[in-house]
Length: 290
Image (cartoon, rainbow, N blue to C red; front, side, top):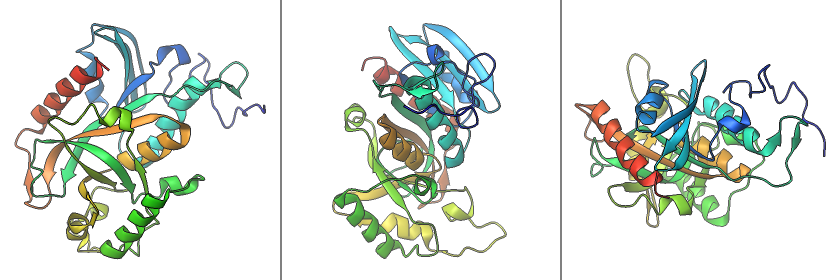
């Protein structure tokens, strides 16, 4: 098998992958990703012990154990472009031999769970509640740089999405489902639905400050979308990239979010930090037992 060139897989002087600055032995196979670097310590303070702490730019990694479960918490920063870096480098750490620069014959499937915040797109999904994403629907264009195929249901869902939302002036959307083996553990206390991933926070999520929008009905059209039993529950900036890349690479992915804004009733959480802390405790309680 062909070696991967140093320009393509960059390994630093301590034998760690370039952006994350993590070595293969410093990574657990169960990983929680968070956007905010400060949120890493909020999770790892619940660990029984911490084995490793690494930081490079906005990427912070803490690896340790909780109830004998080995976990890594990794901050990604905001947006699908950072997710492209993180997911590819996490995969490289377990599936490429750093000594030979050759892809391993026996591949490892990681469990990757995003823990973040989002905006609700349904009146009945209030602020401070939690959402487990059944699908990630990307308006961000990232996966279109990779070879990927949709199954028949996904093709029909996307066709219906384009027809109902009339988002013809945006990039070609894509969709990927959550890992069923992870999703089944996050039912009680979680709303479920399609999560739309946007390539920005303001215009791409229908916010108006000083600039006009090319699709001023965006929020209403996303809220009104339905496909069989599926509806759009929320939007944010990372889920579709995690689901899309994760599926292509053979990993099990799930996105879990605290609702800090409801865009339908135009409310924002009075204590978003408390909502995030509640989600952290709930998720760690589940993850440590599966």
